[in-house]
Length: 449
Image (cartoon, rainbow, N blue to C red; front, top):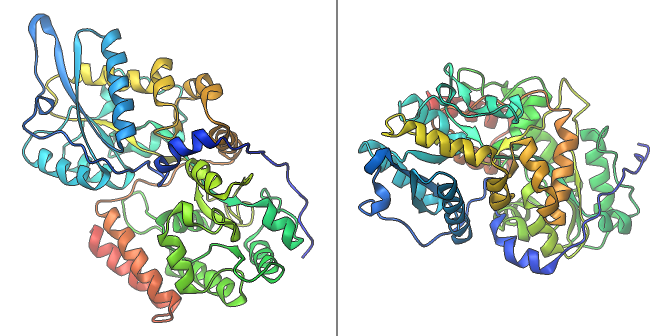
């Protein structure tokens, strides 16, 4: 294989203070975090009331860290200053507690007026009649790309509007490439065969304990989604059923097994252990590998741990098969209760959070890079250098993204757990890639059916 031509680098000048402040906030694509504080269901925050002179009180529910809680308090204060007739009461918890609490609230007819949603749970709540159709309200989405808005559209309605976006990326350490004597790939043209060969070369030309890639099969549904989309298929079809052939999934596992066997990635047990350690224990973060697959919003934490300039690369195969596989992933979405006593006030709050430059200045990239393109441009110079690097990457790849994946069905969160279990069985040789794919498809259909 000819060495691909080098691509322009996007420098990252690390700022230690900023990294220390936000590194813990970028642990997952959707910004999950720990938050010991919580509002109780019998607190004033649990009420949605109407005061004197037509004033409305609505409840806003979210998950996240203490930092996000403080940020949202500031957001609420700014909104109330502009809309003195609307009072917003907070209702918040951590990621794990959020969904248990929301299930209890909705079952008891106490759904928050405005609530954060995530793509794996959006259809479930919409199908149950919990969410309002946002297309019926005066919420401006004209500055949000259609492929992003469409991620919340199904069953002839708009059930959630993304607040921001992230993109899956190969985070690369140019220093490892240089030390191995391997040129950085041209990520606009490289194939999966190129990827395999380059990762093996890096492992062979670096000291023991340094690997080419953090490649450990399919532990995230996003990786299977990208692979399926590249092959003209999808993780889920429009009806919420499996949208790919078992041979497609088996082929991806076969590639991972081949890379591990060739030494381009760590042994299975080591790879799974690295994966479990999270972004800051990844190969790239620990200066132990050339590539690690993560989300754009995780760059800052990983670069901070690495102490090096890092680059963002497209996934291999984007021009190799039927279509590009990358997509703009909603970091999270805003939804509204179908039973809100004050739907117009709730819609006003949602519209303000999505479209107000002042809201953008407060939120910055906490919910992903703003989905509203004008707001994104407005806050660009207020972002850290790593966030600007991620924003530039997202802008570059967006031009090649034709659409978004179909909305996951009910039970998609449980399906992701199934995927991890089957992945381990395949990688440890307890089942073949083809058998694993067929089992996954069968059991996923039972979970979501």
